[in-house]
Amino acid sequence: PTEEIFTSPNKDDVEGIVFSSLPLSYGGNIVDEFYLRFKDGQVIDFGAKEGYEVLKGIIDSDEGSKRLGEVALIPYHSPINELKTLFYNTLYDENASCHMALGIGFSECIKGGIDMDKKELFEKGVNDSLVHVDFMMGTEDLMIDGILEDGSHVKIFENGNFVF
Image (cartoon, rainbow, N blue to C red; front, side, top):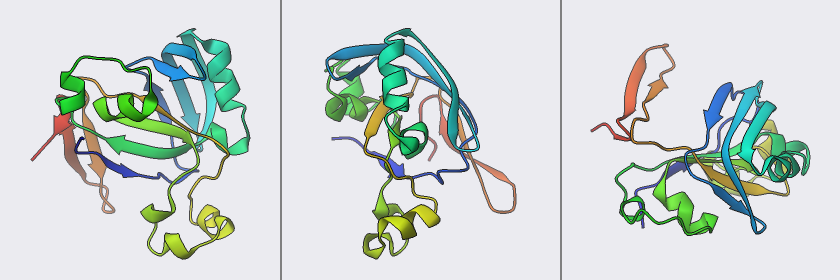
């Protein structure tokens, strides 16, 4: 129902801090107003105004749950977001916002990945985990620049939407 573009980031190359933009409903619990800080691909610090223990449980699920398996771009003015409804179901709520996921990545994001086993995918940088927990981080003022191989930058998102 949206214009989602997703990928699996290299499990070892995630750096920085991300803040949630919508509550996460997980196992009948709410995690809200949280952040995750990454270094060398792993969550090294986190906090939540609500649901800290639930977030901690997700992060501590296994070794791979400390790393990202997905980064998805969705325009702020998507059809689902325009409803201004929180469904408390990640499969719906993720369609309202740019989101990331802690846990397992996608084999189809690597050339030939569908035919690779878990070990080969892991060696190519695709995260492995028992979990895949999406959380929303898109906002109306989100700005995203892509960094090209030559080090130059290209705008991808401005004011929460794709730049065309």
